[in-house]
Image (cartoon, rainbow, N blue to C red; front, side, top):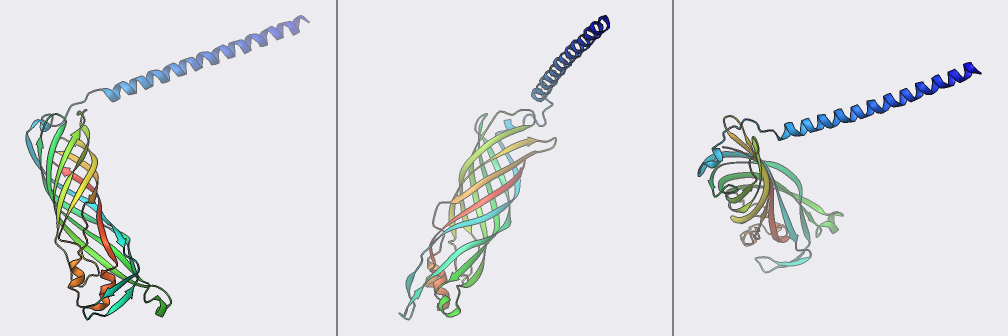
Length: 272
């Protein structure tokens, strides 16, 4: 009995020591994790040496911009309609059109930015935007003859000359980065138009643009990636194009829509 009692006491002692050791190890592990997290948080908030510390204090500075864009447009299809040709002949037409592909384009330009105060700046950035919209027309008028809607394609190439005018609101600079948001207007002139196109855009438009970006202060220059969305404020469809078409077969395609709103998604990189 004495031996059994001694064994029972020994096992109890070992179990208690194991539990005590486990609790102690757990407390030490949690304490070490808290200390490490606090150290990382402190390190993240520490100030580092600033590159180009006085670049934002200049009243005016200049740079260049390059980027990529994706051109899109929202079209209002007319649907079933009666068209009167030049010889006074009337025809029934049902043609729809959609943008089926989004080809990437690019943009280049220069910029001039004026400092208003610590948080606001005004920027002018004349740019050239190159892009293509792939359109698919479906002629349901000819479907009775062919058994299916006859499709026609158009590659609508566009070159815009834009005068982007933006107001920038930026946060305080921390170390070597500074996030911001922007909004503004961009009057544009369209340099491309072909008489043989089914649809033709006007020679001008005005875009509202809004976006966000971040300044990165590098040793020799400031890099600013920016992502923005541009929305056309006017009807960019050229209705005069229908009146100048020589081929009557193209009239149903040119008259298939009565309103176009242009849109663009732009990723730009500013170097100052």
